[in-house]
Picture 1 (tube, rainbow, N blue to C red):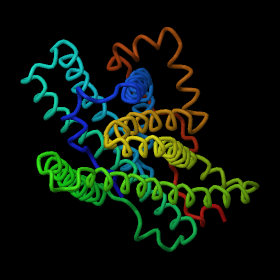
Picture 2 (cartoon, rainbow, N blue to C red):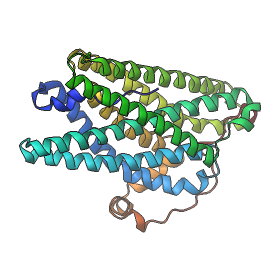
Picture 3 (spheres, rainbow, N blue to C red):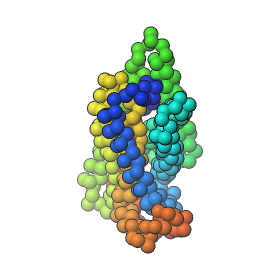
Picture 4 (cartoon, rainbow, N blue to C red):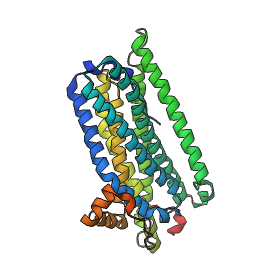
Length: 330
């Protein structure tokens, strides 16, 4: 289910690459990162406001992981920014180049793995909600506990890390061994990236089937419990659209023996934005909280001193991540 990490040619050939397409990709990644950086304080604030209530919901473990994933993303972003600054002021000295190559490889790998785990969890969540909705009797088998969530995360991160390390070693061998196909790892990367996109599409379709069924039952009062599932649907749709837009560019990179890493980095930053925006816009309660946080008296405290604002328990309202068992809507 994963797109792979780097072709070592991307880093080792850094100074010799044509810059037009690379600059466009880099500019896109930087612009998206800055946008995501601006959104984060408000996303974090509203998440903390909702946390006490959300803890009682069936899929809080996954939503909470999304929040932790965003925090990891910013840590990775800070490290990458330091690398860029060093790269700009270094005039490509040999020692700095190898630092950039090694550290950049691992930072890039971490960004891609975190993104892939997020997409994989979205897919698993879609499958779970589909089964819970259309096969209510599966509820006792599909509830996600903290222990099972931690196990799923450990397995996901472990397998994806092993896969990327393998592909990275393979790409290095391709650089230093002329007998090997120089684009073998890149082709595998592209195939896996497309496979991941198909998985996201299938997950989106499962959620669409749930939403269509809910719409037909919209005249029932209890059907509103399922409306907040739009949060996950919007996130899946946004991730899928982003991948569809990047696939043609991935083919261009592959054709010119560039590898897919820069596109995967853009994908990672884009995913971080979709997680935050879909959470902020998934229901009226979150939107109103966002508008309130934009008021001048709250804005500076949220951005520059978030710890000064104490989370409050809101009155009980329909939550954005309620269970979707069809028996609740019957």
